[in-house]
Length: 264
Ligand code: MF3
Ligand code: CO
Ligand code: CO
Image 1 (tube, rainbow, N blue to C red):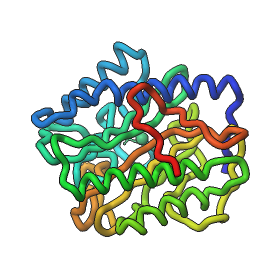
Image 2 (cartoon, rainbow, N blue to C red):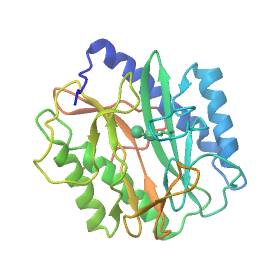
Image 3 (tube, rainbow, N blue to C red):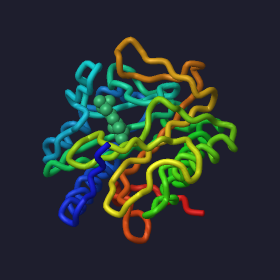
């Protein structure tokens, strides 16, 4: 396992990429309304990235081993879809919840972030799931500092999600990120305090817990990308790209529309 440590020049570029990724979410927010299709959301984001930001949408044609190239520029995961939902002709309706996951490349560096959106008024359960998932991401982020371990991050996310009656998806995780989209280390959203790799200043990685209202088990749709809950329960996810600093952490995927941190 080789974990890249970013220098000051890398970090400057990661800040730019992170802000741009977050600004795509700010841009798309007013469009997430009943009646729009996920394909339209993809087209709007694609055009914004390519024509306004001069960024590259990293998902488009992304083809990790064993996968067909991803056909779109963003991921849109609705209701029981956990992650990697492919935009298409599905029309959003009142009461849906949707994760929009954006990864841009700017000056060779990646910024990766996602948020949950309510389409109209959410059910009480859906709102609670989205809020608890957001808070669980922040439980993980708050563990980040030199000398802390990956197990500290995973354990704090898992404990919070499970104490609230939800489950943590195991098959997908956060990841190191830089000039490579998915690099070492893997950031599990479950685990044991004190176990695993020790964090070092200059590491950059994502924290992106996927939390299910029901059981943790997943199913892959025949499209080979879209991951759904096996029991058809709702699922939520939030994602930030994080830098390990001398004092603790810096969130790199920030913009004017970023929701306020959840701090203890
Ligand atoms: N953005 C996702 C992540 O957080 C990865 C999407 S890969 C794609 O790691 F090919 F599905 F777009
Ligand atoms: Co990611
Ligand atoms: Co992402």
